[in-house]
Image (cartoon, rainbow, N blue to C red):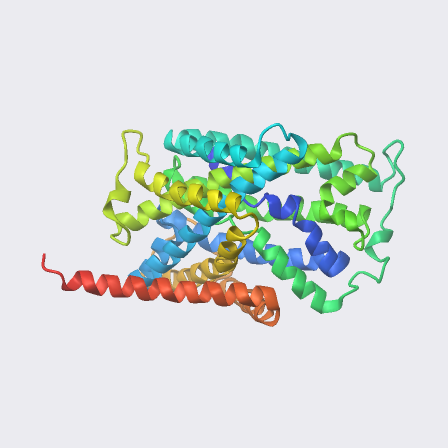
Amino acid sequence: MKPRQLVMMGLGSAIGAGLFLGSGVGVQTAGPAVLVSYLVAGALVIIVMRALGEMAASNPSSGAFSVFASEAMGRTAGATVGWLWWAQLVIVIAAESVGAAGLLATVWPALPVALMSLGFMILFTVINLMGVKNFGEFEFWFAIIKVAAIIAFIAIGVLLVLGLLPDAASPGLSNFTAHGGFAPNGWTGIGAALLVVVFAFGGTEIVAVAAAETEDPRHSIKRAIRTVAWRILVFYIGSVAVIIAVVPWTSEALKSPFAAVLQVANIPGAATAITLVAVVALLSALNANLYGASRMIFSLAERDEAPRMLARVNRRQVPTAAVLSCVVFGFFATLLELWYPNQVLPVLLNLVGSTCLMVWTISLVSQLILRRRADRAGLVLPFRMWAFPYMTWLGLSILAVIFALTLLADGPRVQLLSTTALTLGIAAASEILRRWRARQPR
């Protein structure tokens, strides 16, 4: 993979349906004060990515945070976080395939959702089997489309607020304080929105996985990680600020927030355009998640934490068996969703809904341990966390607050407890299997 492809993956990895479709939920939950939720979640992601960047620059690996956890806390910890992340991705792959097909059907109903969904699965399986160069190029152009759409959206929003668009009345900045004030639901609303917002940033960690197959990985990962801060400020904070300024937080139109803004701006075909961009965002995420899942299971197999056959590569250096192992579940789960709409995948997604919180927590703990170990040994790291260890502890403190808020909310609490049970189950199975293997005659 070329450095430009990794940088664009870093730019586009968190720009998905969570922004295009889910940002409206956060606005409706907290009102204009959702900007506070985005700033807190953004600060957390910046800290996590800086920590991952420090570890990945020192040790580029397809197993990324799984390998780092293994080095810091032992093989069981590494295997647990690796399998947990893999489980999340293979479930999400199916959800993204069905979701993209469903969205596309709303503007182009020529083909059944089932057929389009299976077509997407086949297409991206082939792309990932063709090699990391082809994957990187597809993801590069997907990211450019998403980034261009966000920049155009923000530009239109700014012109609208300034009253510079013809045939469109400027709302000014009154929506920031109207309908109950800046924080109509108080700190409770900001906390509830934080739970919605933080999951929208899930997926940024895939850059650490991809770094291992990039030209000059140490330099490339540093460039990609450095884009995180301004990406969040410009794309997320900028987009949400435009939405809040243009559309009242009490509006039902926030079910599709980007389309709502473009409709106020009297942009013809706004709903269709933003739907197609959301389809691209979902397919981009499917492509990236299939890559990430295959490399994680490949890394686990290399470390004897998964069947060894999954560590085999073809002449293009593609772990074919690993890729196919990821899409087998994806095809099956997609078919189940199509046979039993809205019944199967929601249950599976609920089971792994808090996986990103677990992965980020383990990553920060790993960085804390490995950095102290490196400092004691006098090692010079090519990329370092700011203000260590205070910044790492700040990230862990934010995560502790999010965990506490999650336990206080009914739906998210079920997700967290389910993910915790799954995590403990994977850890127990990994430890039992390792001890059983140790007792076998060689």
